[in-house]
Image 1 (cartoon, rainbow, N blue to C red):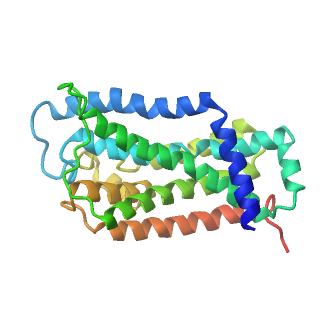
Image 2 (spheres, rainbow, N blue to C red):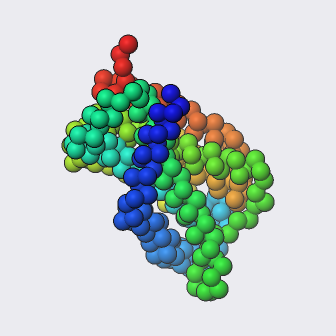
Image 3 (spheres, helix red, strand yellow):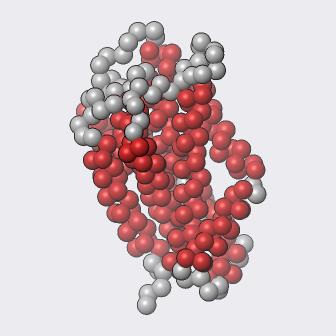
Length: 275
């Protein structure tokens, strides 16, 4: 099964690489968020005065907290088109040729998930790199990502695993929706009904101290929050967090297993063999 998955994954990645407009748009969105929203929110929220203790948990400043949150933000939003590509392949007859190939249904599904996870994972690390770079431009008015914690090898692995898990989780779910749904309009209506509530009930954008108690409870178990907590603790320290990074990583892994099981069930009738 390895060869079909590799070949199909390579096909999807080549299709992405040959679409420079899509690549440019994918990069432009996080750039705009960091340079416009991030910088503006940092000035409005901070106002030159220290934030209350725990307001942004262990983050040294609002922009640093926002930048790491944006890494989780793009890890989710970067997967939105994975299912749409499946629908377009069905509409143009491409999927029929793939289904008629010797590749198994599992290879078809797995390759879509793997390819769909690569772009959001790379975008997340692009966001982190750009956020660090903004702090070293020499422009005093620009805020940057301040890493205040010594990053260990274990911490680096935890960060990579967290980003990969959250990307793969939603890529699998949205690919399953792509196999189930026939029209792009219906697909985007469904995924936005999932995407927006997940993002806005996480701690990706909202400061923890600004959340009402009920939202803090929801955000605690949100998979995007779990991934971001792993990153923030490794970058900024564990102060004000209830658990160490590996606990949040374990919760994220549990979410991933549940979502993949759900994706398999959703796609069973249209993709997976019954035998």
